[in-house]
Amino acid sequence: MSVPEQHAADIVMAGVSKNYPGAPIAAVEDVDITIRAGEVVCIVGASGCGKSTLLRMVAGFETISGGSLRVAGVEVTGPGPDRGVVFQDYGLFPWLTVRENIEYGPRQARLPRTVVKERATQALDSVGLTRVASSFPHQLSGGMQQRVAIARLLANTPSVMLMDEPFGALDALTRTEMQHELQRIQRDAGITVLFVTHSIEEAVYLGDRVMVMAGGTAHGISGHVREVVTVDLPADRDVNSPEFNEIERHIDALVHAGNAHRLAPAG
Ligand SMILES: Nc1ncnc2c1ncn2[C@@H]1O[C@H](COP(=O)(O)OP(=O)(O)O)[C@@H](O)[C@H]1O
Ligand SMILES: [Mg+2]
Image (spheres, rainbow, N blue to C red):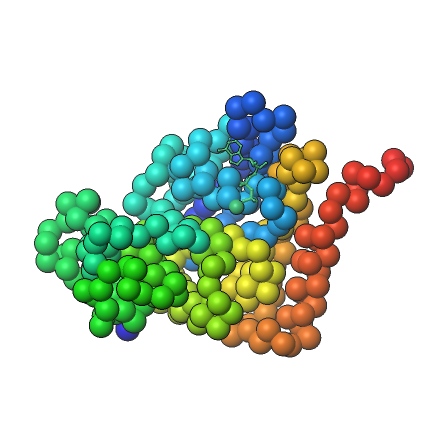
């Protein structure tokens, strides 16, 4: 199986912040991270700590309120085909077939017809959907719809893949399948991935690094990065190994440390 040719880009954030108008505290405050081209970084953290906001700023759907955010050396000022986004709810066009959904981006980009066809054929093949190319999204299972969303993204040959809890609505078995699928695609394409998840296991399984965020209105503290954990494990990870569990426990403790530092007496 081949994936349409992609090229990876790095993401450099320096002091990135987001203040929504009227909000008492920043949704995201002072994020510094350099994500290397081809790296997979997962983001975990309690609800409301700014994970989606951070992802949407990289996507260009939200402006940044402060700092600098560059993808492949270029300051992000809005959405672009270099950054593909996949959400939990697939976001497919229900009135278009699977193939038409996938061809949509390349068509919008006014690529020659033969290139559009070829991109779609490759993308369909890379997610194993060739035989349902003429189906409509509603005729497919959730896992397959999510594959269409990934294929649609690949057909645009982005350099960065931004995923916001993409597998959150899938059953456990399908979710595991999709994780393997994503890993294979990521390795074939060498694409940079920023992946938000509620599952610490998923984050440790997929991530080269895991960015642990904390804060949020519920805690009265701006959303921020608590720690960036390097997952120093071999590529094919055993979720049941002691080493894997050790990293999971470390991240779990960071996520659930809550705001002890705030509540603890001074000194
Ligand atoms: N469009 C918006 N306008 C105002 N506040 C928002 C908006 N989107 C998110 N927020 C607020 O920003 C904070 C972070 O939200 P979000 O990034 O969705 O967190 P997460 O994805 O980690 O759950 C929350 O307090 C949320 O209510
Ligand atoms: Mg979110």
